[in-house]
Length: 304
Ligand code: AMP
Image 1 (cartoon, rainbow, N blue to C red):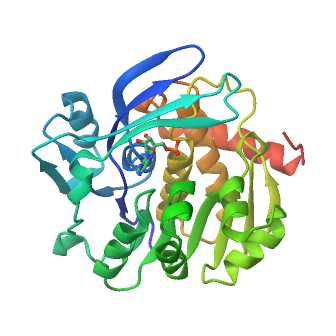
Image 2 (image 1 turned 30 degrees about the vertical axis):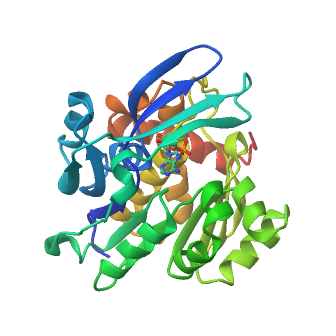
């Protein structure tokens, strides 16, 4: 794979209401595609597939019109942008969805411009598995599919989700989702079950305990960046995916452990500020510095 391949991604673009013990904010920029694109565009060109309403903010449009993000497949429809409310427990250990307003997402039909159907890397961000399948079916050529999901789809759309997993090369999920999908809290067993369904690699994120990778490479404890002041965990998974996929787009997929380290480095910026603010002004140099620190921790075998 040549370096700096473009990435195509589908997912949500949202106006979020976020509530933490310290601060609440309404109608801030969010959505899986937004966090992903802001993270991955540090590494390569990101082609977004999504929809916003006519109420989407100038700030949101400015983010997508920035360098390295292609908006050819962004639809702007009359009506409200997808809205989501998240409220965190005081210690951030759990999150409650306070509302979901589908808005223009309700009738979203992803359409990929013919120039983009041969994009070599596709990240299927967190949206209904039917929409993920729709994008899989539009892609042509040799595509690397990297997929994320959430508990909601395991609850309400399991069959379609398994079909997506079957078509996935690298599957990203967190420990709770892995248990919910496979029925076992033993993450090694869970990853074996998931690998038997199609993916060549499964990456299970364990929050502040880091991540594990199973498949061609196997490692249990890849640490997170230490000492981060947790302000707002929203988008951690999507920006992890952005750093992970961005690394693969730039350097290939021979070293997935380094890709995970870069994903964790990017996510550490996301969670240290509200909404997407932690991703607004970072540079590749900032990401590399944190990735080097995580790498060092890993080689010294210090488990955070
Ligand atoms: P994460 O914290 O990584 O789970 O991602 C949070 C983002 O996911 C928020 O910005 C939400 O707008 C978005 N989100 C929440 N629920 C959904 C859903 N049902 N479909 C698509 N995106 C969602």
